[in-house]
Image 1 (cartoon, rainbow, N blue to C red):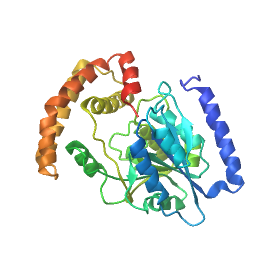
Image 2: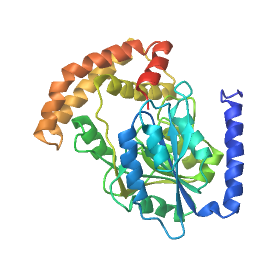
Image 3: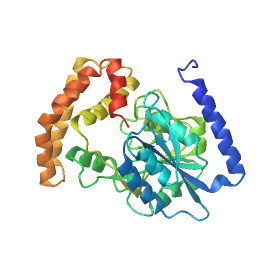
Length: 333
């Protein structure tokens, strides 16, 4: 481990893998477009995602390479990945962080452009990949992220979040605002549907220490280096979460913890009280104002008394490091 707390062994592995990939590109593999997908116990969603990828229209003279990073799935996820002839990379639940999983997957790819996709995200049409890679024709583009649409069963909060974050107009992230914004707060870039320039990743791999939101410090860094990050709304995927209250509360905690880390503050009980109040107010406002079917709004109100106890229990238990490790093993993927 070096002075910055990073594991030099893993860094050396990435360096060696990068050298291998560079050698492969010099032998004609530079025409490869790579896709990295992280999965854990999501066989059905992964199969849907891979089927959609196989239907993509590729740019001329390009080949598609898919790497699946499997987080010790206990269902048929690995079997699905093998059946679709992908490269499968294993990562244990004990070692898993979002950034570490991406680094291991990207290290096994060969493409100059690497697309990142959640296993539960599905390209909306056959042109998704084409639209994602088009902006990289400009040499200063390092990150592109696409538009996320809700599935039909998406709950009210997800519908509002996606509509607010992913609009219909292209965006170039403001360097003055986000080059010093490692928390990613207010930044729409999301690795559920993104593409990166390999050389930018080789300069600065994803942070493997933070619990989540790894796209924040990565995008902040590349902007500071003079690269651009673009939002490409024509590249659309379906991606939304409909989960049980416990897993949903863990996801929300991950965001709370990430923001606290980058603000260099400690989460205390009063922080949790503000969090619970914020969740309640957000839900009620969304149910009143959102442009959504009435039955989704009614569902949002009716689910709130069931979900709030989960937020309370998760919040209080996560104050202990042992509980945080256990939650990641059980809920994270």
